[in-house]
Amino acid sequence: FDNNAMLLKTLKKAVSDGKLVQERSSYSIPGEVYQPPADETVEITEIKQGTGAEAASGDNVTMKYEGRLADGTVFDSAEKFKFTLDGGEVIKGWDKGIKGMRKGGCRELVIPSKLGYGKKGSPPEIPPDATLHFTVTLLSCSSR
Image (tube, rainbow, N blue to C red):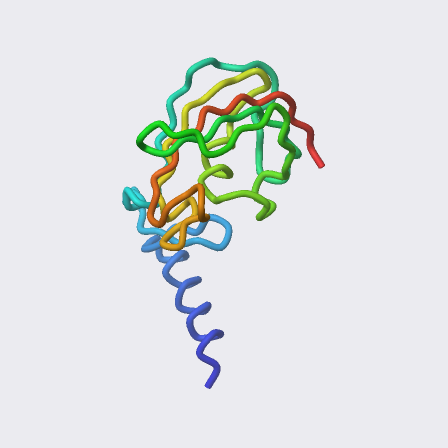
């Protein structure tokens, strides 16, 4: 008895019967909208809309940023910081908050601890369970 094969067969039947909707490797109930919990959501405020193509997963991006704690203490900043979106190189909140930006765009990101440095923080600058505030500007974006 192969449990994985049986599960896949059941999911495919539910999709063919219209009881589930498949999008890539995810399944959902038709008409249901999934709202992630607050501790898994990045609050995004668009300060300035950029131009050109939107930054997407796998793109190489160069950012200017300033990171602050909730009390306003600056813990980090950079004029040019390069990374690959969804490449596992930065905190998850950055991947979520920067996707969709356009060159020259500027955003304010409020990142919950779970999508930042979590329960351990990043001592000594970032305490445990810290909510992080970033002002980010997309300087450049290129596909891999």
